[in-house]
Length: 168
Image (cartoon, rainbow, N blue to C red):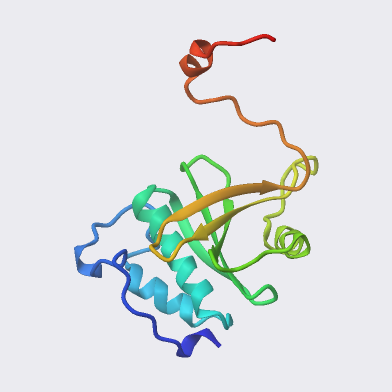
């Protein structure tokens, strides 16, 4: 059970009294309280819990995402995060994993099925974002969908216009 492990303080875990209130904080609880809550979930891998906390801080403080909440998925032994990039956006599912964990295709499919949020539109494919956490707290995000999805157009159309096409 995750509640008994103690981890060294992270450089990403500032003292709660020095964190200004921001959108996304659930009430007045600071990061230390969130870490304690994550540790009390029925998840046995403390490295996965720590990774979830690093991603929680990155989304909330580094990227200013909204409504960042942790959700324990005991069946998968994962702490997932639900969050909105912008207030008006749909909730997205983040699946934090330490970099040393290997994921098989079967495991990824299981995560996709059990951690994804139900979609309003039945034609919308299941989607989760793997948040891979390095030992130095670097986080790399990989959005995964069930099936093929047409990518969104680039934010900056000038970049597309300035690219040169070469024909052979």
